[in-house]
Length: 348
Image 1 (spheres, rainbow, N blue to C red):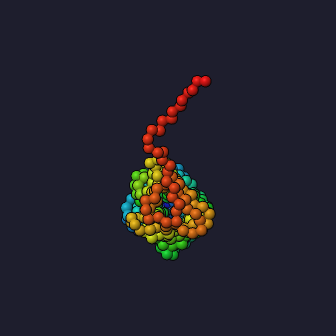
Image 2: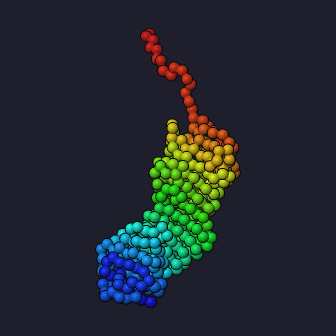
């Protein structure tokens, strides 16, 4: 095990180039290239803006950035495999690779001090947050990795769980998802949602989808005046499935069942109604709630089969056909004709 410090500003990080590695901060270059048992440091002696070009995947035991502000422009097709802790402080990382800037392969404490980690892949061991995590590109749980938020807030462009051996533990965290497209993609793995809130904030006109993987969630919230079609795939369970009021179209995968304790969906009146429908017209999607009352407003309902012990009511709403289990109350419309109010004054 050894310490390796990057020196001399921009350069190559590959298996043989020793011209940017030193044994001490600001020391002489020529130290061996770090391996999976070595700790890597970038600090104020590394240079201001450092272009690091990867000729191959890199490895280290831990990865730490600190000291005066460092800008890392990471170039090439690469991944940094980290077998220990990651600490990012006073750093700007640009141009992350699609495969992830950091691929964590063993038990890890991840601390970022509010700086953007861009892309992270949890591929082995247990990664436990030590403060709030921001990954503007993506966070992926793969292989045998365990991701534990430890209750800290998480902000990601996209979240994916791709392996049956992966595990995600959200505790009571607020997980903010900023991307569109397939912003949440739970392909496989275990999920412990705790009392977390997963909040989607992208307000663009792009289509987006929530691929829940048939998991049990706490609160899932699609916020703001988003446009495009929102697709909810798989048969999932929610404490509260929520979409802010507005002109939205929400499509559920054909034949799927969404189980809810609370359903907070609806438009805002007039032309701003929320449409709930299946991906294929004429094919049912199912909604279940075990008890209580499910009351929504300003909906356009199509092919929705509601069941369970609860009563389902949609006021100021429209029945577009194929529904069952709902009490759908149409908006009140004044009768046609002269709607002027006439007042007659009689002098006595």
